[in-house]
Image 1 (tube, helix red, strand yellow):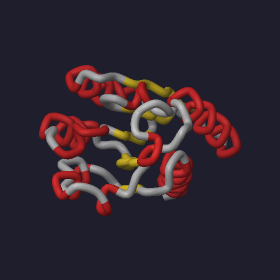
Image 2: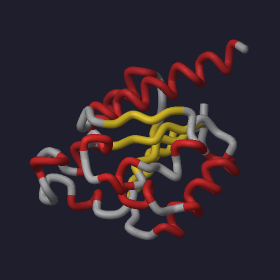
Image 3: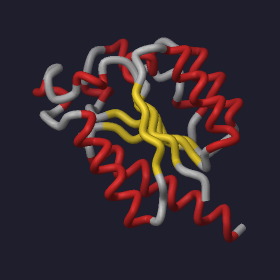
Length: 149
C-alpha cells in the first residue's frame, strides 16, 4: 500500500515553543515519532512533511494523488483561509482527514470556519498529538474497508 501523507502547515515547526498552553509541549519531531510508531502498528507507512508555504502544501497534495493512499493534514492557519488547499484536496480524490491539536471551536471565532472540511472525509480536533493518531486510525479503517469493497 502507498504511504499516508501527513502534511503540516505554517508554524507547526514551532510546536513545543509556540503557545504551549494551547498546543502542548510536544515538538513536531515528537508528533512525527508518534505517527510513525502508530502507523507501524496499523501496517501503514507515513510520509511526514511540514511547510510554512501554501503552494508547497498544494504541490504535495497534488503529488499525493499518485504517491499516497490517503492524507492527514494539519494546515494550521491555512485551514481558515485557503481555497487553494480545498481545491487541491478535492482534486486529490483520496481519503483525507483534517487534523488540529487544539479544539478550534473553543477558540477565536475566525477559527470556527474551515475551508478544508467540505473537501475531506472527516475532521479531528482537540486531542493534542492524539488527534494525529486518531486520524491515522480513521484512514486505516477507510483504506481497509475500500480494499474489501
